[in-house]
Structure formats: structure tokens, C-alpha cells
Image (tube, rainbow, N blue to C red; front, side):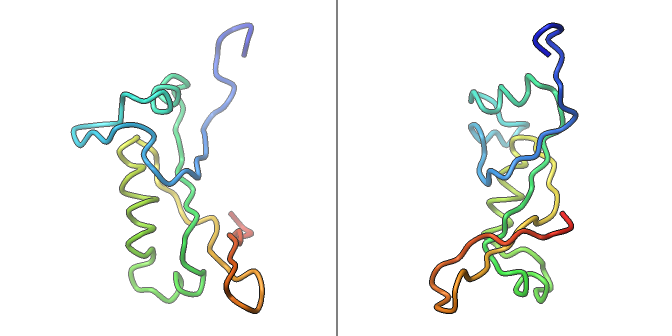
Length: 109
């Protein structure tokens, strides 16, 4: 709020699948304007996962997320202190050629 300086959000949802600052194995990521800005608003940051796999691949996998999704959407964002959630979209073919893909949202998320 511009008048009081108080934050007007209770939580922030991020779909960025990379660290927002320098990776610091001893604690939360620091040293980048992105990480500092998130720290300044002092609200939980939830990591929404946009999977590079199809929904069928994810559902049939005994491990769930593939290694790329796990690294980019779970392990790396944890360095920023983001709270990991669930996949909110999966790759899907845009047409019958299967050459062009888009992210298909999970409707109940």
C-alpha cells in the first residue's frame, strides 16, 4: 500500500524455473535484485511447476517429475527459499504434426 508501505499480497506464485540469484548452498539465495525484492516483500513464494513432460508421461512415471523438471522446478528454486508446489501445466502438442508444443494448464490448479 503506497500510504502505509505494507505489502498487499499474502503470497506470490512464481513459474520461473531458475534461481533468482547466486546459488548459496549454505542458505537462501542472496545477491540478486530478484532475490532481494522477494525477501523485501516478506511473503511466501510458491513455485508453480510447468512440466516439460506431457501429463500422460507424468502420470505414468513412478517417480513423477523427470530429472529436468526436478532440477529446474524443485532443486534450483529451493535455493531461493521458494516453496515447491505441484505441476500446474504440462507440454502438449499443438497440432497433429507433434512438432509444435504449448503448455496445457491443469484445470483444477
